[in-house]
Length: 264
Image (cartoon, rainbow, N blue to C red; front, side):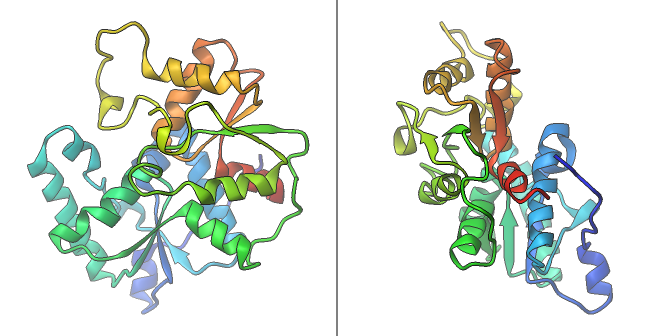
């Protein structure tokens, strides 16, 4: 995959010029700091640039949404982080926010309003699927050829926000071979990292959740496991390594698959 340098507008620079983007791309902590998920953020930014979408990022001004703090029980830290973010977003007059992380999406959309943060928050899969349906994003269908793909539903997209159709709609345009795990959609098993579990040691038990979920994915005999969340990507990738399958089975985010189809 080619990650040639593209120019990403910074919100502060546009504001200084008296300009305002149509969308703020909220990169998130994983997109900014995790080496693997940076590629997902780059992929989505490349697609936005390809479609000539008027967007910007906060850059160094972006802070954590406070989701991990709240899930771990530190309400004071969450509110401090959230209020700081709300003040910054309001100062820039931000109305529409695009997210690639379901955790950022959920808390910005559903929990920030309690603290006065009222924004139109759009998950990137909703945005991309609508662009495809509207003819704004076009590529030859079945571009991934004989690839068999199974999709892991992130908890904060699926059960928390009822986003099941869009990811599958996109994948079915990329390949004719989309297979479901036994547990999918509202019955999907968590990857094991949600609710701040990502940042703590596993508790006692017979098997870790990410291993159970990876085994379910492997039983589909898909050669690509598609994910749409940084936590899910980390856990599924770890599961493939645990099963010594990382060479034959690949884990890609849906944005990365679109970039492959577009040959960007």
